[in-house]
Structures are given as structure tokens and as C-alpha cells.
Image (tube, rainbow, N blue to C red; front, side, top):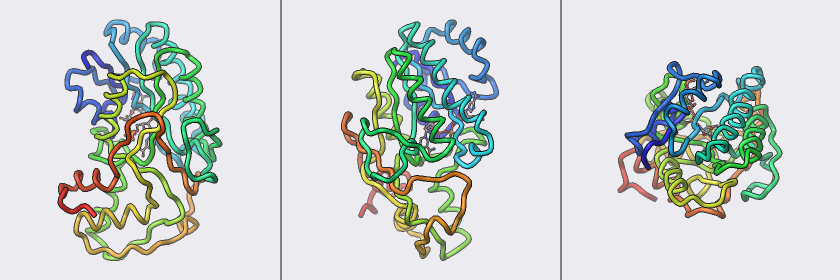
Length: 281
Ligand SMILES: NC(=O)c1ccc[n+]([C@@H]2O[C@H](COP(=O)([O-])OP(=O)(O)OC[C@H]3O[C@@H](n4cnc5c(N)ncnc54)[C@H](OP(=O)(O)O)[C@@H]3O)[C@@H](O)[C@H]2O)c1
């Protein structure tokens, strides 16, 4: 698609959307601070984009417990303003949310299931979803989960679990990993492609669940990383209580996609990332 605007283009997902749209306008800090909304509005009006993909977020799940104002400003108020701007100019908008809007009790969640976030991050993302959908434009809110892939260009961009595990594998031959938190898992290039398909297909505005197929505990994910990367590291399953963190996480928050074509299993995507498509299980 021509003339797309990517916000948060130096992040993990934004970087992959950019890779698919080399002609896109790619904005991020420090050049563009989306919280300076009058300046952002002027820039958007000068660009007149054909679509906006908003990859900006306050993504530090534990940090959000200490900085709720910052989390809500970026994850809730800003997407609402952006969606109202886009609706007023009839610009299609893709915005992302998270499986952490669910409490994890039900385990598997379709798009219509009611959210019940456990953390400040989850509440801020849920409010962002509601604000975007309330704006009433051509807006798609894509819930996703545990994104992995090449790191974004920004130094603050979240490092993926894959990089963290490969770093550990260089130092240790036994690691502990949490077994009682299960999530969907998402390869950033696959989500970027699915985002472009969404924009091209323009299904009805609303909520969509887009992750790779399957689910994994941190323990499952770590084991598959070491297997596919041919690292002989033993993974000891431990309860999440072994690693106390500020924010509560859902025990099992698997996103069920009932509205879009399924993405491939996460293990296949991981094998591609690690450059070993021959090592699929
Ligand atoms: N990563 C996951 O596992 C995960 C899971 C579920 C949902 N999601 C959602 O998926 C989306 C993409 O996540 P991601 O992991 O790609 O995020 P990311 O790597 O943290 O990228 C976010 C980008 O937004 C930029 N940004 C932050 N504040 C900004 C501001 N005021 N103005 C302009 N840019 C700003 C960041 O710049 P700096 O780095 O310089 O701050 C960064 O480049 C988000 O909506 C997130 O909530 C992510």
C-alpha cells in the first residue's frame, strides 16, 4: 500500500511493518513525539496518509505499575485522540492491543469475550481499545501477544524472549523458566504481513486477534528456542512465584482468532527466525 504512516517505526513491530512498506512515512522518537498532539496533527495533515499503523506503546508491563499516568497517556488517551483524528479525515487506522486485557481464568479468548485486565498495563491497553473503537472510523484493533523477532532499531525497543534466551545460552547450560503462564506467541514479520492483509482486505472495523497459531508457556518457548538453535541447555520448569514481579500476569491468555486467516504455527516462524527451517518438529 502506498503512502502508509507508521508510528513507532523503530520498535519491534513497527520495524517489520516498515520492512514491508519501504515507501511508508516512518515516524518515531526523537523526531516525532506523538504526545505533542498538535504538532502530530499538523504533520499528519501535511502528509495526508492513505492509512495509519500505530505501533507506539508504553510496553513496560512492570514499569507501568509505578507510572500509570505515562502508561495511560500513551496506551489509552493517545490512541483515542489518534482514532478521532483518523475518523474525522476518513483515514483507515490499525492499532494494537494485548492478551493482557484478559485475566487468564478462562484460558482461551475469542474477540467477543469480555476483558478483565489484572495490571495497569492491561487496563491502559483495554481503555485504548475502547477509545479507538468509540471513535467510529475505519479502525481495526488488533490484539496480539508475546511478540518476537529481530529487535527494533530503538535502543528502548523491547528485546524479545528469543534474544534473552540465546544470551543466556551463551552463559549457562541450565536455566529456569516459568511454566504456569501460557500465552499466544507472535512473530513480528508475520503480524506485519497480516496487518497489510487487513488493510488491503478492509474487513469491518472492530477487534481482531492476530498471533501465530498455538500457545506456549515460557518454559515451552525456551525449550523450543534451544532445540531449534541447537543449544544444549536444560530448562527447569518453575512457578511464576519464583520470579516475583510488580504486575500480575494472566495464567493462561490464549487469543483465539475467529475473524481472519490463521497465521502459521509459532514453531515454524521461530525456525525461520533462527535460520533453520529444516529443524521443524
Ligand atoms: N512486545 C510484545 O510482546 C507485545 C505483546 C502484546 C502486545 N503488544 C503491542 O504491540 C504493539 C507493538 O509493540 P512493540 O513490542 O513493537 O513495541 P516497541 O518495540 O516498544 O516499540 C514501540 C515504539 O514506540 C516508540 N514510542 C514510545 N513513545 C513514543 C512517543 N511518545 N512518540 C513516538 N514514538 C514513541 C518507541 O520509541 P522508544 O523505544 O524510543 O521509546 C518504540 O520505537 C504495542 O501496541 C504493544 O502494546 C506487544
